[in-house]
Image (cartoon, rainbow, N blue to C red; front, side, top):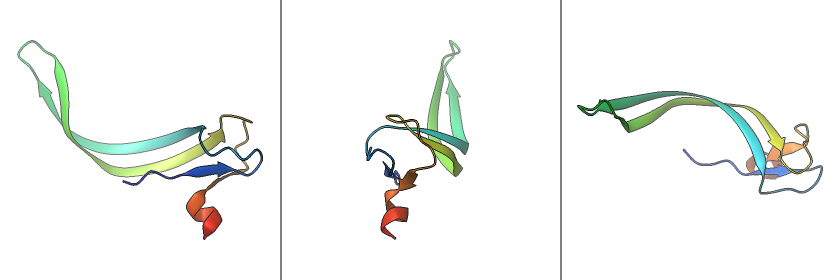
Length: 71
């Protein structure tokens, strides 16, 4: 899954964002005899970005994905 780049039109930030997502995954859980868990072969079944906030100015209304802004 490719990472989405964001830009805040309010302050020009291109690097710092708080992104809230919901993911549905399937993974193989491998427990050792001692009870330690190692998660293997994790597959993302679905992912929804719920909210993106600019870390610099706190705006959420002015944040756009670069693909959206260019398209």
